[in-house]
Length: 301
Image 1 (cartoon, rainbow, N blue to C red):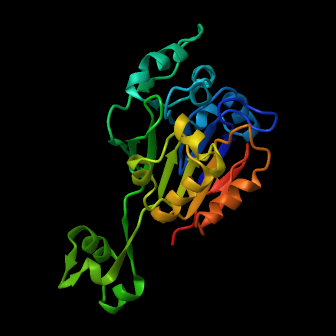
Image 2: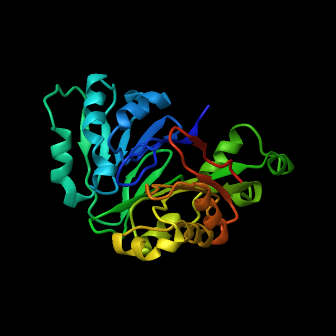
Image 3: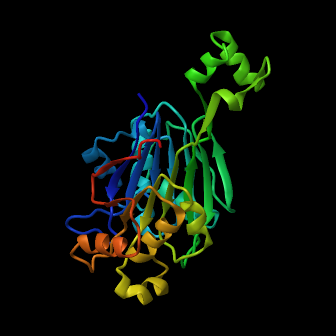
């Protein structure tokens, strides 16, 4: 049975707190595991969450500030220590390749796993697998930063009652699917297009075009909300979003499940982020992330 869920490993911005680790997010997508922004302590958080190095197929780093990348050294060494049996692909801003290399080789260890470095230098498609297309889009932050999006290809869902009405059964169903037409019956007459699921990951950024592109039509949007709305000027100055801004993006984009995270240590009441998100007009499913939380992707419509 395929599993699609977000495993939250850490939710703090800039520095960890007693209750929040540095960033870290694992997306379980069928049999694949995508690790986003492994901050310091991610390896230990993986242990607490029941996530093994063998579960990792891809690492996606939005930018090279420490709270989003200092955990790379430990995670990469753990992948090799555990002799993960498959290659692991890493994506990150091309301008930060020197940082990735430093973290990858921060200390001595034996490399046993093929780690493919695929830096991001422009908007667009990064990779294509049978179950998703991975895309990146530039964000607005003091250092080069990219957000990521997974888009599952649309598929055809055959409608048994319509097939029966046209007398199509057995091998003829596959023949119709391949050809698009059989004995005067078109594929559109006996099937419907099932929209693929979409997952978007948006970290440190101001409001910009990339945020809207990534969020558009997402079934789940994981997005930073470092500040509350009363500190909008600080958010803009430091290249971040407020809870209201993030929720406004989600409302305009038709997001089904909004996950707010990356909280500043200056705030003690997580409920205020929820209140401001609702006040901004977001009416869908809403999660205020906390460490070790598991959030399933919404069921298909």
